[in-house]
Length: 93
Image (cartoon, rainbow, N blue to C red; front, side, top):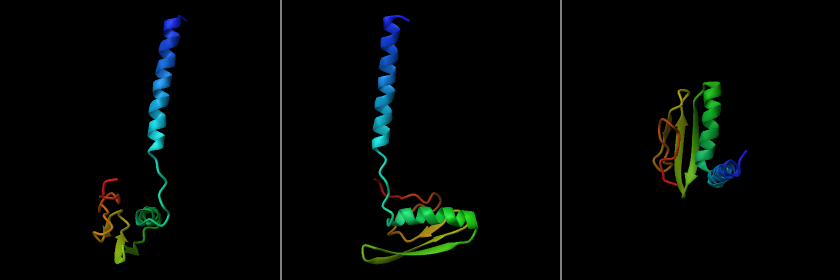
């Protein structure tokens, strides 16, 4: 193994480590009382059991509700900002 090959390998490993550290720093744990977290957890349960569920929330002092259907679709008030088909937030982070 030549010195040049060793330097190239160390540089590639350093670059991969830098990219992976930056990717890991972006992950932020969700607040367990956040409506999006509750909807995501309930979606898993609804898909497993096959029974629809309706959730009631209070967001900024306003009542809001979300209905999760067994086919995975979510019907929610606009104050929650939930995409109907993916269940993800429509608000930019």
